[in-house]
Length: 234
Image (cartoon, rainbow, N blue to C red):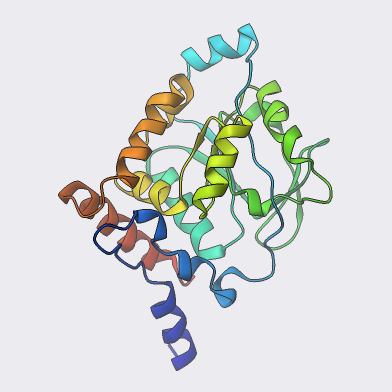
């Protein structure tokens, strides 16, 4: 590993939250590091809740433990890490770096190729709103679009205000990307529960964010830290 790579790893390593500071600040500097994130980050959008069809409500009640997951994440190291964490829990993951069109639903692979996505195959979608093409997709249309397909959506912005905006717009669940990674690495976020009862899942994530420096928070942080470092460099 050369000096430049060592510097990048040091910049990306999770930073413990100081006393009295919310864990949402974890890895913020690392995630926004231009070398790691690259130029593939698009603008702002999100997904939401809304009314589900009766068929969708039944499907949510019968949500399988092993789910088909759509992961929208542009940063390669974070995409690899979240994909691994989800697959380790038995889920099947389709990872795209960006959603560039809704009709038909189309994304971009980590190699830049267009990927046709079939809405009816997914149970849950993890979406960073910065990785949705703003010019082609209206922010307010994302939530109803995914709800038509009965897909639960989890917003993953690194910015607290953006997560608040996403929840207000109708997204099912939203939390800082660090918190979500901690919950996946520590096996605290149950996607079956997220589909059946998103309010309970949101409560779990909120408790993690609001409980820095506790033994449980440290356990989750250490698990996420180890997983992140494992997948930082291919």
